[in-house]
Structure formats: structure tokens, C-alpha cells
Image (cartoon, rainbow, N blue to C red; front, side, top):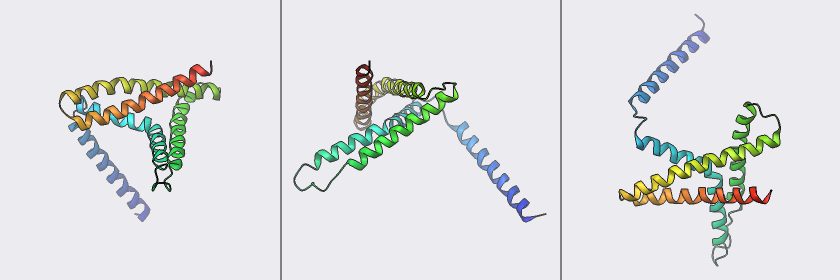
Length: 168
């Protein structure tokens, strides 16, 4: 037997074992548990709003740079990163929309922005309930984190709506 065949067989066995282990781990998880849903929604909210989070942090750093002693700080790279990340997210939505059959690039881009904001709005809706639940249980750090994410999503939606109405 050739060495390459042995290596391929060994890799196949290791992959099968890894997938079996992953399947067992997934079966152990209670995916219907509210905690699992909340973690997933929070991670999705952070991922979809990360561009906006980066831009806001960059603006904050630029604000701090006006204070004597902090003049050397600059948030411009964070702002540029936020813009780049936002365009990557919109690009991912555009690819899905084009796969669905939209041929016009301009229409696909507008539809991607609308879909992105619809998802952000749904995550904001779910996030408000999660924040209230955490406050009710006395988990103030988690509630504050959710509140900050909700504020960022609200800002994103506000800017989007303002730009949408300005273009009419």
C-alpha cells in the first residue's frame, strides 16, 4: 500500500471521529434552552453590529484625543475598519440575494441593506426582552451589555432610516 493512501485513510478516519464527537456534543446540548437562544442572538447582534461598534469606538477615541495629554490618539483606523467590516456584511447579504435571482447589482445592494436592517431590527426587538429579563433577575452587568448593544442597533436603524428618507 502506498504512503499517500495510508495518509488519506488516516485523515478520513480522524475526520469521521471528529464529526462523531461533534455530533455527540450537539446531541448533549439543549438547543431549546432559553440561555442557548440568548447567547446565539447576542453573538449575532454583535457580529452584525460590529462595524458600527468599531466606528463608534473610533469616534470616541477621536473625542478623547482632544483632551490635553491624549493628542496622539486617533480613532481613524477603527472608523475605517468599521466601514470595511460593514461593507463585508452587506456584501454577504448581496451574494445571497444574487443567488436568489436578483441580477441588477444596484437592486441587490439596496435589498441587502434592507435585509441587514430587518435582521438588526429583529435582534433589537429580541434584545430588549433579554435586557429586561436580565434586569429582573438582578444581572446588571449582562443587562447593561444588552442595553449598550440595543443602543448601537437603534443608532444603526436611525441612520439607515434617515438616509433612506433623505434619498426619496
